[in-house]
Length: 336
Image 1 (cartoon, rainbow, N blue to C red):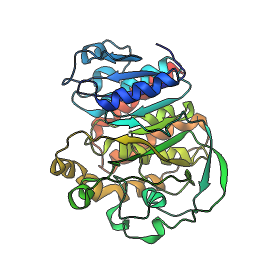
Image 2: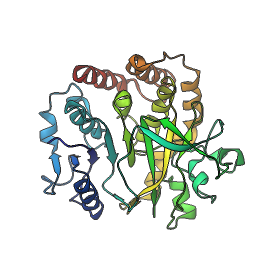
Image 3: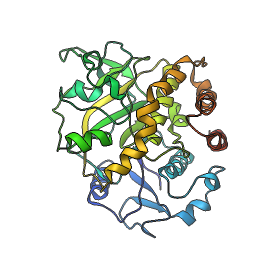
């Protein structure tokens, strides 16, 4: 199945209302959906414009990574990325089965217009769009109340940036951590606004729920398997940002483009899975910042490997991750 836009999700349930919303959006733009299943969940997925890969079908894929990925983990989504890349997708859109495109959802382009954020160590992007007590999952807790993380002039002019990774925000149930949900949980919408561009050197976690990727950054899609479900896309985002800076590129955040109708979660279990992040996110970005990496598109794969080697050396991630990273990069190289 080939199309202008390829979207990737993983799921363990029958098509949700949000998935039907994704299908409707893809139908408007002649897009297709790759659905990666797991041990739990449906044996088939009979929605238009979608192609479902059950666990048994995944085991037949010709990728080195396929037999190495653990069962029952969100990182199986990596296989969806590899399938799309093998089909020469000119860009990828990844999302989740509880995020439905809203009325402003549109296909993004590599060149995009955004406001340039003044450099700072950390930016709380959520508060750039709405100055309320809220922060993205993965944001360091000791910086939540730091005004320097969310000061911004909303009248800043728009500039054009080349951005091979772009994140859209989510309304109704934005992607926050378990602490926010346990203490402050409520429906939350972001007002319309301008996209913002974070310069190299400015950190903000991003997720895998409404994210756009272009080929130069395809190696950076890798989701680590030997960390918790609540940290895999967050720690990926830190590695991806560090490598993105070596391309001379920054990260763009767009106003809300999806509505998250959040699946049922056990918040205390989420909290438990987020503890490694609460304790170590700042140390992780410090480790990545201190790395000496090479610049340019040809160095992306090697830079990714060096990042994971450094995280393993500091014991943030176990050494069992490295064979998977190597397999991922071997698959990427074979598909190039």
